[in-house]
Image 1 (cartoon, rainbow, N blue to C red):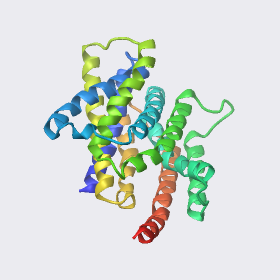
Image 2 (image 1 turned 135 degrees about the vertical axis):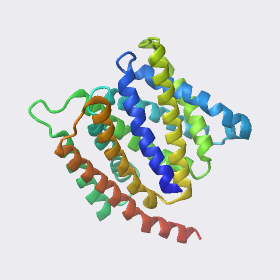
Image 3 (image 1 turned 180 degrees about the vertical axis):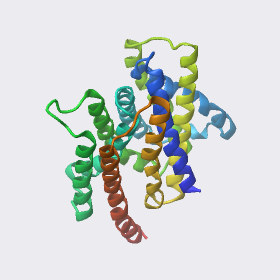
Image 4 (image 1 turned 30 degrees about the vertical axis):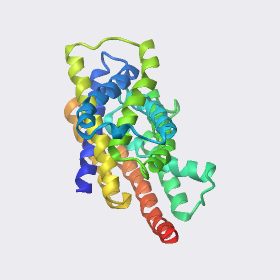
Length: 286
């Protein structure tokens, strides 16, 4: 079941990005970010009514706020990216988030630079260079936005891991939707424009797919260890290639596939390398 939920999250996330690219022709990605969160919050209200207001109860409001602020920055950069570069290229580079998270842990949390972590960092960087292939003009804005989104999201992964120890998947998703709507509104107002009739449909699809993917991911990580479900995330790259071709006529080149596979391999090294450490920590606590 956890693998199925992870697959739903992967396919939903890439499909949401395709919808963002479509509606970005009429709305600025920053405005799309606000509507994705605001409408996503409305979609979650029936669950709140069904289960009761206890989902709002939390002793970790500050952590939810930090997580939401990080997520807003990452999402805005990500939405800017998918409006500018091919879907498969964006998806391949976005796999760098856990690699960046490992780098932050080594630099700022004094975690040991073990062999698996150093190997993952090296592979992640090599994979990114393979996808980007910087030339004399270096890289375009779309690639830089994607790298920034992965970098910011990498910083947020540790916050999410911490919240998962005490908060339910639904509570985390609900607080995130509410607070991200608040944080996204001021910059959205600066660039504001109202969507067309078809634009509303695209925004509703973005909100629905985003909320579904977030819930599925959170629940998958509750039901199984990350190492058991992480390989499923590779579906993102395959689906991005298929959807990019069918919807926008984008044909990923060979280097995008190779670089994406290298980056995914770096993530897998991290996941598999951390599993023995996680078991050791649990045994010490026990």
